[in-house]
Amino acid sequence: MIPNKRLLSFTLALIVFVVMLPDLALSAGEDYEINSLKGIKKVAPIVTLWISDNDNLSSLKNTLITQVELKLRLANIDIISTDEPAINADAILMIEISIIQTDEPPNSYYAFSFLMDVMQQTKLFRDDSIFTLGSTWATSNMVVNTREQEFESTLRIQIDRYIDQFLNDYLKANPR
Image 1 (cartoon, rainbow, N blue to C red):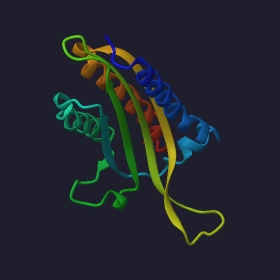
Image 2 (image 1 turned 180 degrees about the vertical axis):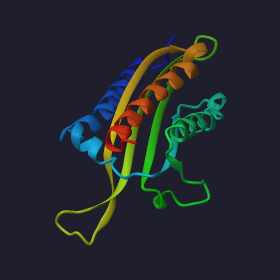
Image 3 (image 1 turned 30 degrees about the vertical axis):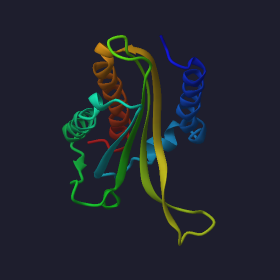
């Protein structure tokens, strides 16, 4: 039984909107996104989890950051150490994951959305003395009704798929 179905429906609708927002913001085209990856040598991967009251998933963040770092290293992309500020990297690879548990175990189902975003230092057109972080490449997805037993593997498969998409675009921009 799902507690407060209206709240869950509203939350899922909000997640869908937030997931679609990057696609609307970056409608300038895929070439813009790929070209923005040219020359990146060092990346700071950051994973943020937004979890609805579930302590069982606390180790998931470390698992995901290890998975992401491994894929980046295998593509010969340097990873900034956790001791250094992320701003010292050429780019920040932000992965934000929102997770909602729809019921209590053992009947739990999960819905999750994620946004993968490459953030780089940019200048404003109106005043080129102002530097800020801007999103130059992004992708997102949402998965609903994943059973508790399949949740972590489903999430890891999705993250892998979109890291591969990033790496494919990265290698197009930086051929070896």
